[in-house]
Image (cartoon, rainbow, N blue to C red; front, side):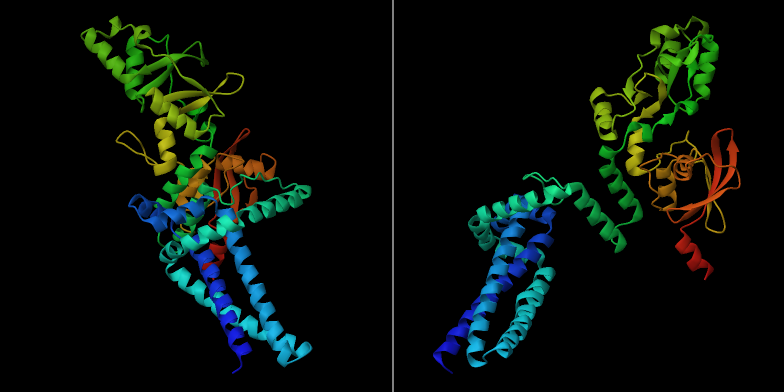
Length: 430
């Protein structure tokens, strides 16, 4: 064995070793559990602290690792080609060098280190975080320049990314992780819906969860006190809007507890009640308020009830704290609530639904994924997709379901039959 071969072997082993470290680092750092790293950092683990520092700017970290990985592989390939072509001149030497380096890189710089990194991602990430921090510091200016060049090249295609743009949005990363673990059977459907509900709060408006004005239980302020008390006791809610002359003219809100205190104060003499004295001021909010902001507003003002108006001030509905919480935990029922109405399962797997049933309620009840970006209710989805108000008996197929209109009242679809996913129906028939 000549000295040249020894030197070549040492250089090849060194470059493959460094390449394997870069490959393992890339896989481990992108798969490491951020939650565990943050917990370990709080416990004083220096390796976890370095990992979190690298993940804080993931785009630069990945760029630096890939730059080092590719530079080392190109160097090792060039050295191998130079050495082998001296023994096997011409095209055959280049071919032999290509085959040899492809096998060596694939086995020792790709599959082997990445397999180890996948199996022990957190441990490998902490072990290699120190060298990778050094690599990021060295290659940082180069990566910044490359990022700037890439962004300039994307501008003509209408893709405008600021230099501060993060590659992964936190919400989407969490959502993707939940969906993945649900598909693997590690997260139950109910937990998946609850976690998704939390993430959706910032993307939903109160108009999507409010009780429509047609379904609001409200009281006429001009009714005699005895009749007001009777209607309050008959109502399923403790907070009721008061109107005068016209249902659109809301003058305040009556709380059942205030009514009971007032009755106690007059020793049960209903006729002596002064309803105006116990009427609370109504809280009006725009229908474009997102649920996250409204939840914070409820908690800040210590109120559980708000009336929703449009841009012209017209009453659209009402929303309560319970309505928002139900978007996270599902329907909250007490002894005065009835079970979710309007969804009736059929023996063939389809469901008969009232047109006013919301898509989110139907998706939760049936574990479906009908889109609710363009419509709130099932009837609204059919009208949006059909681009018309269909007649009874008409059938439509979209979003992998068959929708049949059962009843229509003037311009309102009141009942539909929705099939199970067509793929599932075909499998059950087969």
